Image 1 (cartoon, rainbow, N blue to C red):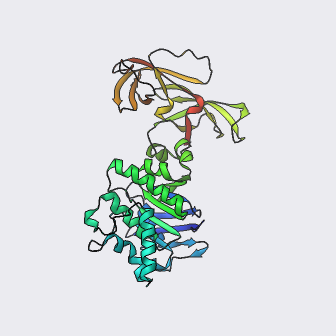
Image 2: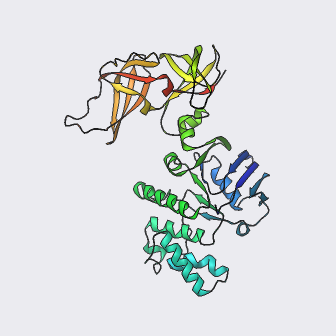
Image 3: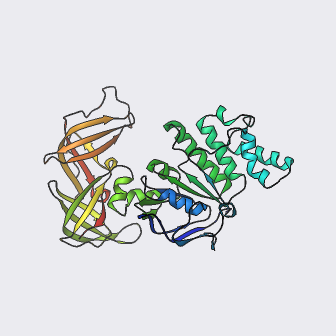
Length: 379
């Protein structure tokens, strides 16, 4: 791997009376595509600027491969930044923009030409070197900015919401290209975004942030399937989230895939009913927990399921609102007590007759005990 290990320990930052970062600790592995994910104002861009050297922490350390870099100027850190607004020189050509860092190092004209052509090829801009930024599309401008940031061969590339100015389709295309570039050059990428889908698509690991705190660090699968807090559960994708009371807990004979002891719990959700959920957390009768289930894990049908499995949760309601999105339909199902449950049904097969479930249909919803997840124990 060509990148650096980046370790952040105890980093705090305040602006006036407002604390932006609160004792942030992160260990980012060499060559990793690591994302800082959170809503606007959560501190992720400030943390990136501290890593880059554009801001200084009040306390705490930032190390590259074990060396504290907090006192180093930005140009001494072996880290380059790709900004949201491209930050290209409008009067220079694409070639000259990319070559600019090499000219500062006083490389020979021959070496500069060879290297710039190499990076033009890397970002698929061969034949565009003579153009000015004003002649480029948004995606092409971003590729120029990426090439310019990479041509000095930094050990860490910092990306501050680099795709947010692009339209949705181009953003998806650029995201794939960015991931391919990372695979080719193998350095450490630290990527700031508020877009959950972006982070889930390309990251090796994600740190979810809110109000200056890191709430959870994990792989996209871990973050999505096993959220550590209510905020993470609600922020990452869509979910149904409820507070529930623990009625009963039974240890199961089998262990889960990781060899942990597994329990079957019976929960009561006020105004909804009793549900079953499996968990590896040792919860107790009488505790209040938050429980979640993703909409795509719930089955919906007009006919009552005939399964004999004891771990199935089954409820009846009516379709309050169907939202058709082409590849799927999202249903808001109103239960008899008035609670709305979100259900997503994928369209795997073509139907001449149109949707089989429509507005106001009486429906059954069901899911297995292992499909839900206990997020937090609250008392």
